[in-house]
Length: 374
Image (cartoon, rainbow, N blue to C red; front, side):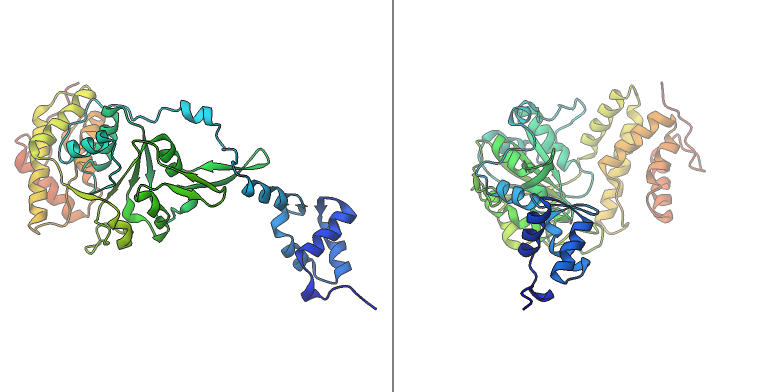
C-alpha cells in the first residue's frame, strides 16, 4: 500500500526532513527535483514549500530558517553596528554662522533646553526654515539630533529597526527612533504629513513611554533629554489647495499626542535681508542693495499671495538660491531668471516684472546691468 502523502498533503516539514536526511543542509535543484519525484509533486510546488530556505537561484540551505528563528528569540541580539562605534558618533549639528534666529526659534530652543519630554509639531510654508531652526537650536545647545525624512513608504522597520543580514548572520539593527531613545537625542520627524498610517507605531513613544521591541523581547526606555519634534507644510489635515501634493490626513489620535503646535511664518523683510547678507558674506559677495531688493520683492509677493492676487510665493530658501546663483553667474538678472524658471510662464514673468519695478538698475526690457562685485 502506498503511504506517500498526496500532493495536497505534502508539507514543508516533510520535504525538509527528506532532503536533510538524504542530502544534508546544502540543497540544489537536482535534489529538490528528486524529492518532488518521491512525493509526487511538481518542482514548482516543491520550491514553493522551500521558499523560507531560498539562498539564490537553484540553491537552498535548510539551516537558514532555524538560524533566523534562534536570532529572533535571542533576548539580546547583537546590533549591526557595534555599540562602541555608535557611541563615538557625534550627532550634534554643526553651527551655521549664517543662521539668523526668528519666529519660533527661541521657544523651540527653550523646550529642548528644558530636557522635558514635550513633543512639538511645527507647521508652515515650504522653505521658511522650520527644519533649519530645529537643527541650529540643537547645535547651540550641543544636543544630538537624529533627523528622519518621512515619506509615504516609511514604516515600522524604517523607524524602529529590524533584522539585517551581516556577514551571513541575522542581527538586530536599531532604527533612528531607537537610537534617539537610547541616546537621549532629539528626534526630528521631517515632513511628517507625508506619512501613512504606518507612522502609528510611534504612539507609545509620543507618550514618553518608550517602546517594546517585539522581535527581540526588549523594552527600550527613553533616556533623559529625549524629545520628538515634527515638521510639516500642513497641520496633518491634507492640502485642500493642492500646493502640497502627497500630504496626507494624519490620524487624530496621532496628532493629539503632540503637546503643542507652532505656526512658522516667513521672516520679516528686515530679518530676511539680514539672512541674505550673511549668506552673501559667506560667499565673499558684498551687495547689500541686492539683498534688500530681494527681501522687499519677496515680501510684496507674499502679501499679494495672502490677498489672493497670485498663486505662488518666493520662499526664503529660493532667495538663498538666487544669492548663490548670483555668485556663480555674476549677474542679477540671470540669477533671478534661472531661480524663478520653476514657476509657470505667467507667474515667472510677473515676478520678474515686479523685481524690475523695485531695482532701479533694471531697464525696460528687464535686463539688469549690475554685475557681482568679485
